[in-house]
Length: 351
Ligand SMILES: Nc1ncnc2c1ncn2[C@@H]1O[C@H](COP(=O)(O)OP(=O)(O)O)[C@@H](O)[C@H]1O
Ligand SMILES: [Mg+2]
View 1 (tube, rainbow, N blue to C red):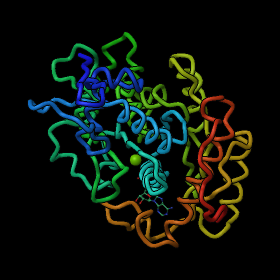
View 2 (view 1 turned 30 degrees about the horizontal axis):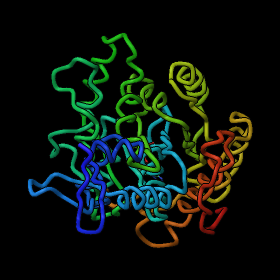
View 3 (view 1 turned 45 degrees about the vertical axis):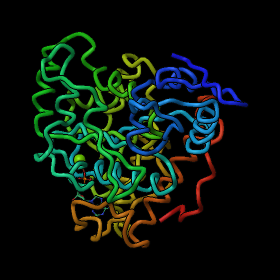
View 4 (view 1 turned 180 degrees about the vertical axis):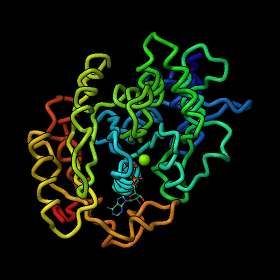
């Protein structure tokens, strides 16, 4: 209950967590999680340990959020391709790391049963009792749990980086979703809603097969990025655009193609040049300018640390891509998202 504490010469309005949540337009769970993570502490507590917030706390909170997000809402972005080995996972975790370094709060959601993003961020998925495998279960399944229960901070990598880990059992969730006909593509979208105010970006790493998990990744996304292996032809990519158009209709929000990213570019060869040309044609020019070069350091990088936290020469193209992504989002037609993304640092803009 709202309560007035009257000291000798001042009156302090104290809000409960629920009232604080209403004041700042977030869910009470979000407020509690931020408190638990030490991101925002109230200035009062009752003798029983219950949190109480003052008007000053409310103002301080709103200012902190405004500065952290540049006034923008969270964007969910998935990395999609029906071909494996093109760099979905690598781009997902390195871009997440690069944006965390730039001050954004980023959640990586791993919905690939191979759980490579989870391993790439330093966790052993088989050691974890609760993962996205239970979050992605259809509504009504006994083991289903909320997304917030599986999210882990990654303090060894970056204080702004968080992970909802994957697990091989996601394959079972996928099968169960097939049987569950009602809104089976929207399980992830629904799950993200409860945490969307905690992050500036949610990056979704997806499996390489057309599946319920992939449809869920797409439908939950505001934008998708399609990594293309510059060493291979583009077979299968057309399928993705059809799938995206379907998801755009099914999803409660627009699902925009943010662009294709050419990855693993070696010294220019005829094959590379033709893949590049084909990609431009196929995506109607919607291809990121930043090209990610092939680097043995990336191929051999230890499974637990994205290369953006390592040597500058290897990290640079990913920072350039992150800066280009921010520019693309700032230029998007959506009036909310185009408002005021902070200026990107000047990294290399082209490899
Ligand atoms: N720019 C790059 N240069 C060299 N190797 C890369 C590069 N990007 C990714 N790789 C390697 O290619 C393999 C497949 O990448 P990955 O991100 O797992 O692809 P996907 O998620 O699409 O299956 C991994 O061994 C990864 O280390
Ligand atoms: Mg992968």
